[in-house]
Amino acid sequence: MTRILAVLFAFLSLPALACGGPEDACAVPGGSYHMALPESAVPKGIVMHLHGGGARGQGLLTSGLAREALARGYVFVAPNGEQPTRRFKRDWSVRGKGLEYDRQDFGFLPDVMADVRARTGVEGGSVLLAGFSRGGSFVWDMACQMPGFADAYAPLAGAFWDDLPVGCDAPVRLFHTHGWNDRVVPLEGRSFGGGAVVQGDVWASLKILRETNGCDARQPERNSFEGDLWFRHWTDCAAGDIRLMLHPGGHGAPQGWAVRVMDWFEGKGLDPEG
Image (tube, rainbow, N blue to C red):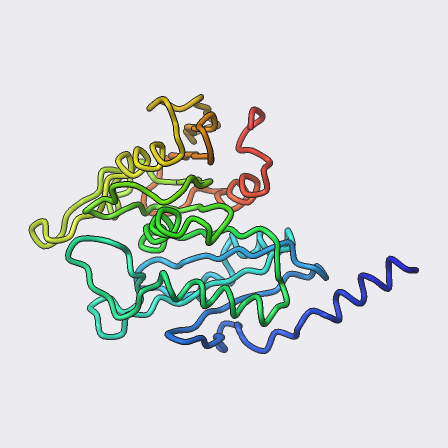
């Protein structure tokens, strides 16, 4: 009976969701976000997902990562990229040569996180920051320049943009996923406007992070395969954890991506060896 009362009290203590649905975004200074609460009385943490360029956070509320995060007991958060006077209005302030923005998201995302915690009462727990395409690139930027924002980072089909950072602030856990046939964000990157703006090279991005994490060797500790998925694991570095998953598709996620990301985030590994 005592245990039942404790769970009931925890559930009643969780604030009602007054905003955050598909048509009712939560407002914070400089922008807005969408969110969904798990059924669990006490959420385990927060999963934040950044949409791709031109999209909106509301579309992620029904994504595979949202379903997986909610099923495992995490609050799911999907901010909106807003650059109202720029050519690409639904975008993130990805660091890069020749790129200017209305809003700097290094300040916006912490404001979103603080508001989420205030509205939900979630004071602790683990945090995962994921993102797709331009959102994935900003995940790389956050991991590099604000590593303490989240406990783990999961960019998909997006990496640093040129000019590449000289180094990052601290080691992190990062799981990068990319399509072998991605022509929107090729593994090697591509240029726009005659080279005025350049997508960075995924391999160069990984090199910078290996140096930050204190990896003595360029090659990973091990490689693994599962069907048509290729994995590289840098898990023997001085700190942090770097994983790379390549799939044969294009600019998108392979089947089962959300499950793998959440398993890795929760420390369950990507294969039988970890």
